[in-house]
Figure 1 (cartoon, rainbow, N blue to C red):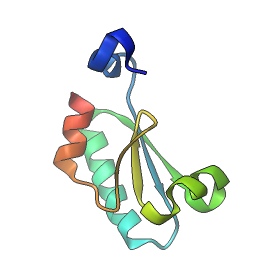
Figure 2: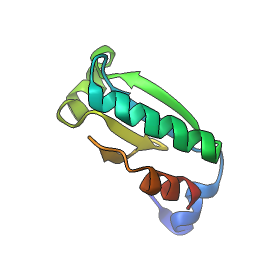
Figure 3: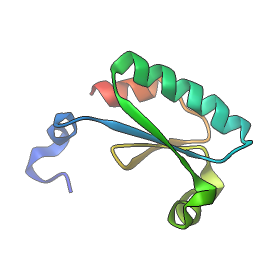
Length: 91
């Protein structure tokens, strides 16, 4: 991907942040608060997916949760840094 548009393709269209976690996960709870706050500041839509309800996500990310995706691409896992996420969404 990337192609001739390089980094500019990320600015086109609405951004989406996806938090992948599971119930009862304290790291997921912490990540949710960071994602919620940064997305509120930046006006970016976010969603949450339960890894226990999705076999494909479970296979891909089980050992890394919580995982944060930005526009479907992995941004980070375990601990979410608010500043880094904000820069990814604004850049």
